[in-house]
Image (tube, rainbow, N blue to C red; front, side, top):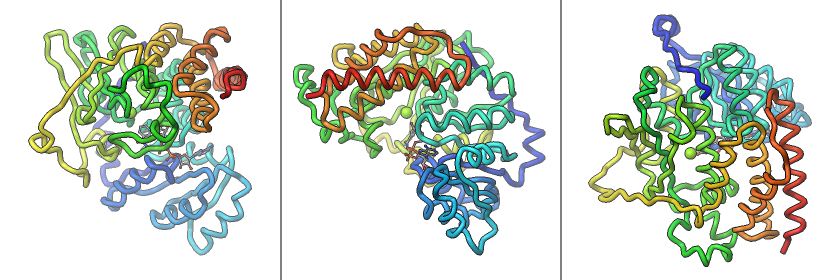
Length: 403
Ligand code: NAD
Ligand code: MG
């Protein structure tokens, strides 16, 4: 168990009550834009320190000028000239590459949104952790690939992590951090993706087009396939283990096709607390942005009478082998989750490119895990090395399996 309890220093917050300075790592993505949407609704309350993006110069410059940011960083350093040009005439400073991302993460913002996608988010998030920042964490990979190491660093440097993934944000809202011994279990809810009630015999023939067609959420192709295999929920199980002080056996998963209950915490007395809301990421983001206070959002208010029924189904391993695999990975710990994440990524892209079948995704992940030995992960260099080996091993399996 690794956890840093969020300590609320209200006096300290009162001093900075007027404004909160904000940095967004990954401001041009879906989470980044939703964060800026919330900031735009209360401009008196927030000032912008740094915004970062990978390649989208036009959007980054537009955001930086509109929100009067101090620094705009483009990760692809070949685009620094274009960024400077796009910012000309404004007071926004431009930077690029790894050093630029590092500078953004190191600025003294009161609040940092970590919303870069993938392993690229690890380094800048660690930089923010090491200056003891308050970090709204959307990037899953920080905890899936390097959970133990990351949470140790959070503790050592006195950083605060506010979970943004909707399930973890829900648990964060209802978890009694002062009395974790009174918690019986955590239940992560899952939409189940498009195939939770499809006959198992038909899963082998699922096409990429069918898999990316998610019933409730409009998301990128990778995460949509992860929802269809339920690997996304497996990754979230690992994320939850590192965020909350409970045992591995106290984490449960339940399919809830309407995506209204975002997760639940069961207490020893039989009480079950849940967080509900319409599926809109601005609710969990706002909880982190306003924390420890709540803020108003434009999200559609929940009308349970209109919805009528909420239903639940227990997921089975035959349908979703990825759940069994992630439970084993969680038991093994160390480099196992890093291997899981890397091999899954390779397998999902191979599936999307039509090279392997839907059921081959879990097979490749399972085989990669058996091929490589596990060890402790104690630095980001370790993580990158394991990640590289696992990708290589998974790619070999893809080649051997290619249709
Ligand atoms: P996105 O792809 O829409 O945006 C990603 C952001 O990261 C962009 O600003 C992009 O420019 C930047 N980026 C991409 N590659 C980069 C690189 N190599 N170096 C530097 N910057 C890079 O992703 P998103 O949907 O906003 O998700 C962000 C993170 O939040 C992911 O880890 C995702 O799993 C997690 N998350 C997202 C949602 C959601 O609803 N979108 C929900 C829960 C968790
Ligand atoms: Mg989620």
